[in-house]
Amino acid sequence: MKILVAVTGMILISCVCLGSLYTQTGAARPHTAVSAEETRTESYVIRDRNGKIAVFKSGSDKPLKVTSTRTSTLPKPDIIRLKNGIYAQNKQELERILEDYCS
Image (cartoon, rainbow, N blue to C red; front, side):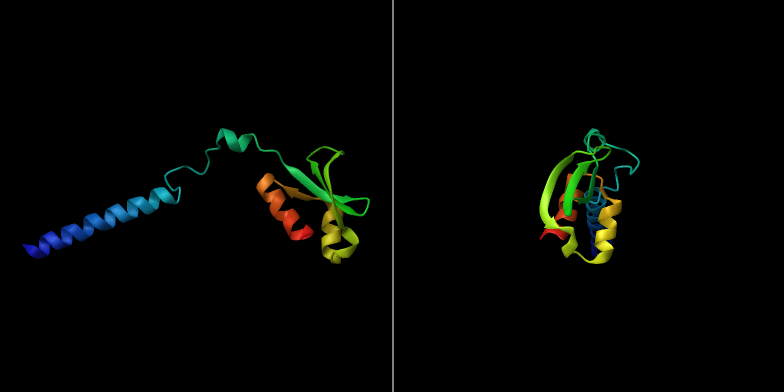
């Protein structure tokens, strides 16, 4: 009888742990759902402007920000990427990319 109670207890504890893990990882939320916050985010383009790294809203020719980082100091592959434009889907991605180039 003690073994049956112990096994049942272990099964219940496992179920609780797995259920908790399931909800913490977001598995309960369908990946196809897009929240209102996600639809309001703006995308950005980082590219060379007059020899410096600049940030533009997608579709705009007017820079939001021009950094002090000169593109000529970067490796050639990065210079090429900046000439073509590096796209960031949100502010967090934009900040991460700028940190890589401007720090």
